[in-house]
Image 1 (cartoon, rainbow, N blue to C red):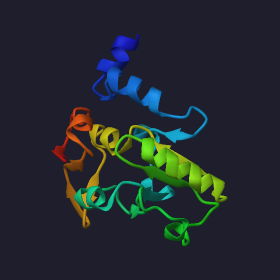
Image 2 (cartoon, rainbow, N blue to C red; image 1 turned 180 degrees about the horizontal axis):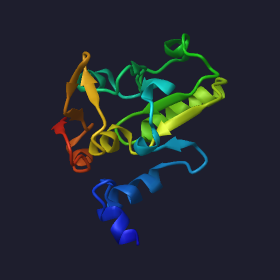
Image 3 (tube, one colour; image 1 turned 90 degrees about the vertical axis):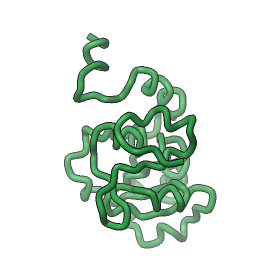
Amino acid sequence: MGFFLFNNPLFSQSLAYRALLEGLYDKKFPVVKPEQITRLSHYQILDTREKEEYQVSHLKDAIWVGYDTFTLERVAGIDKDKPVLVYCTVGARSQEIGKKLQDAGFTQVYNLYGGIIHWANELKPIESEGTPTSKVHTFSRTWGIWLQKGEKVY
């Protein structure tokens, strides 16, 4: 059964990528998978990557908040009681920012499972300056091996 699931064209994530994510994620922090999102507009979307990564592409309506330079002032206009979706390349940085949001009183924070790489691999839309694109900044060549559907940018 597992073999069928991971070779199913509707589930593009590889077993190796899934194993990598299992090692990176805190099992207590809530995640949402791309295939579970029916309306992206349901979330306040925060991109926790660096500015140059965000400028290559991002999820529609994502607000750049950064990682190395993140401050709570950047999210001052975000409603603490509405769902927040945080993401980065694979989900490690966004999980850390998500924990800071929880500590600051945000009540519904979710990490995008697999990050923008898994999002793109599931053929979900990404954009740059309001225009659809297939480019994904994969942080590095090492992380780029996981992007199967899209144009890698480093």
